[in-house]
Length: 96
Ligand SMILES: [Zn+2]
Image (cartoon, rainbow, N blue to C red; front, top):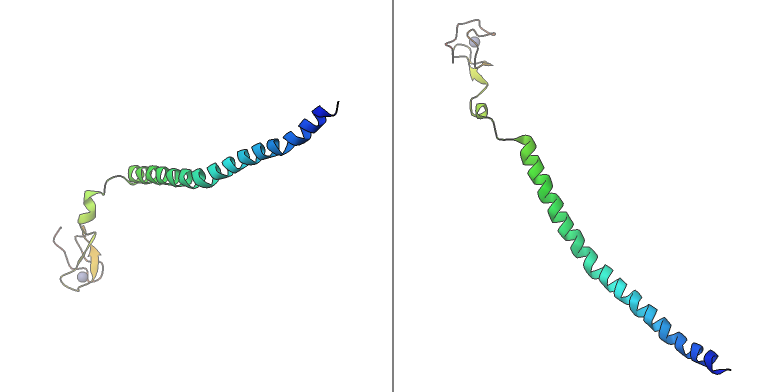
């Protein structure tokens, strides 16, 4: 009648070793896979954010190349490019 108890006691270290191996495997998986998963997730998310940014900002408008202001030839002050009269010296300006 003492044999099953002895077997159970002898099996205990094996069971502990099994649990320990599972924990070690879990730790290895976590330590190896999680950084790589984080890196892949970071790259995917950053690419998605860049794509969304490009979609939101859209193409650069062509009017950006045209200057919004020009210089008055009479008084050298800066006036709007569409102005027909200088607001500083009131001289007439040619339409741009
Ligand atoms: Zn002027």
